[in-house]
Length: 123
Image (cartoon, rainbow, N blue to C red; front, side, top):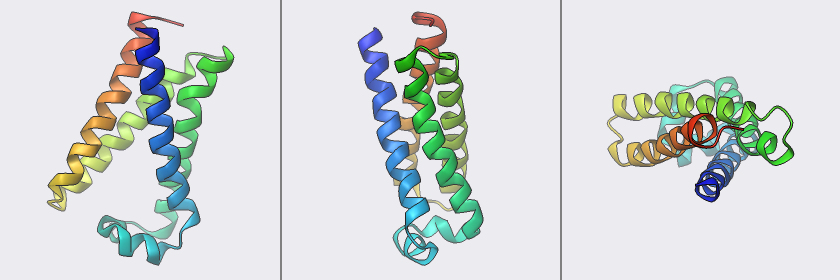
């Protein structure tokens, strides 16, 4: 079970680090050209979302890896789950249904990490 939780943590970290970095590094106009939902948010909001995604990616792995404040890993996973809830709501409102599948998969991974690190194998 611990290996499965670690795999989920690493997958979450990779997905959110990549997403967050792209939101921070790419110009707003390029992001908007790649992802239509970006136009619903200000450039500052997109940078904030990217920053939170990177922090979540770090937080979902580093505390468990180091053993320092390990309760932060499920807390970070909860933050990422909230992010995916918002993303799902945005894609539902915009009728971008294929994107919702990705959101729900990431939401499920985050939920698995929360359950795993708080209930199945508490740290």
